[in-house]
Image (cartoon, rainbow, N blue to C red; front, side, top):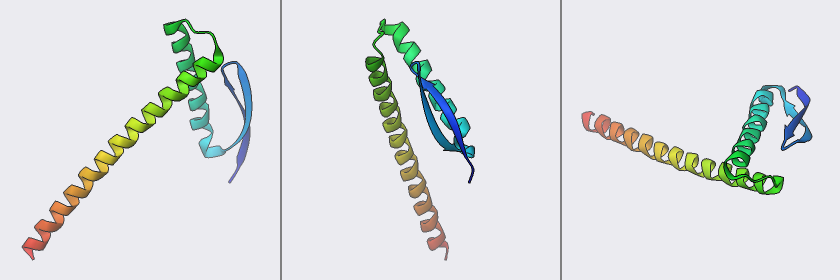
Length: 94
């Protein structure tokens, strides 16, 4: 398991970190997406305070994650329901 030393720039500050080689692209993409959201909020709301911008991005990311978790839970429930239906059909056939 190789670890890479990389630097990610977020809101004009660099953060050194060690990541697994297979995670590097994901980590760099996350940093890029954070910076894009910061830029978007700055342009949309005219906010320059980095702490406010970072708080808004953190909040936005958490809302997105909660929505994705809810959708995953719904998908999982649907899959379990379908498996149960198939099991019932199989049991009836036996």
